[in-house]
Image: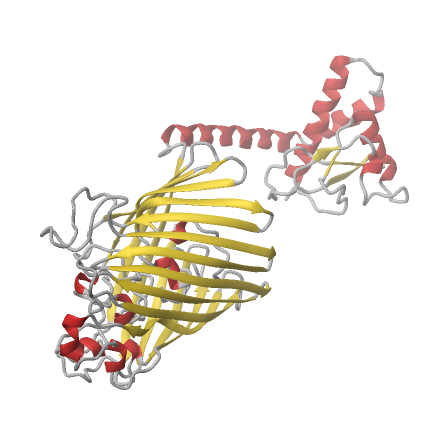
Length: 565
């Protein structure tokens, strides 16, 4: 921070502020401004012992500057280097006045005093000049050898020890084996470029060793009770952690992650274009969650604990996001994401190529509209609507929700479904060290068969409340508690060809033995060891996973270490 300089000059106090103070810490809001009268300095009074000297420097020489808030801060400490820098600033001003010689303001006594000061601080001035020369030389070297003038590299590496502590038994006798303690890792490298200072191009590279549930190598627990009636094993997607997805099936392979370009269109409209792996949360205002960190290693352990699952509905692909500021504190957002945007092939059922159509507008998609309202700095809420289509893939990406909520594959053939979802979310910062956020979401999934004669529907709900404790223990720490209900189906119709397999039932949820609402409980504490290293121990507790109390409660323990650079 720039500091006020003071010295006794021939028994007359002289005070001034340098334009640059070498060796001091400069705060962003402490930019100095030239003053023309000592009366402009609110904290300087005629009764102050240095008032006359300061008035002389201001009005005779004009080499005194104050802070933007109109203060001088005359009692602050200084170093000899700072004094030398300030003295040099006044000498430059005196030389300027002598050169112009338009006003007879320079007195012989003053010149003699300044000469003695210059001689006394000659060593400091020489050192200061040497430092400036060294900085200039170093700057030239960095400019010639730097990676890019427009691009910066940001990285994150996560090491985690995690295990299913209890609940991975096999109550349906489907051959489910217990899980073992694993050591997981994930590394992300983000190349962030700006060409105008207001835009941002981001290219992400990532690799990891821990696939998410239902993939080879991932945790598997809590079989789906609906498919279990047919002797088929399908485990739940609940409890997935933020580092458990978006990887190639082979550990260690490097893949391209998010590719996006964000830029302003006028003063009120901002746009984001996604070429790969874009999600709705990548462009929406982040005002509804304390734990949203782009599925990183600094927020909640679970993906469910980050924000409302409505933002995860078929949300991973190419597309566009827009944010328009209607007025102060009110924004309207629109977005469109297409997971199969890069595929020109017709993949519709019956083509022999799969279960989903390709292209930007002829395949799976997720269209979102949201109104974000922030009436005060500490309070924000939003209303969200999502219209989506998917087939052959989970409804909610990144592993949140029960099997019935994600893959109602029996509501119609090929699991083609249209989705209309509605949600509300809010965040209240009660104090700098305590926040509350929560959400409620409802999704209506309409099954669409090829002949449109066996269409059925599914109702899905999710809601939660999360308590955040920023700076718990010390600055940079974060404590969190999440309690909620992950996406689950309250009804799931059965198309007529499948009803004989379930005793003629028309609703699959009615066939679940000991059907129960699933619950997600989570507690974690991120402890900041340094500016670049944090450790987060925590536990995730799943009650009635996959919508049945026949499945035992699942407890997942994790110690996550995050390195940022």
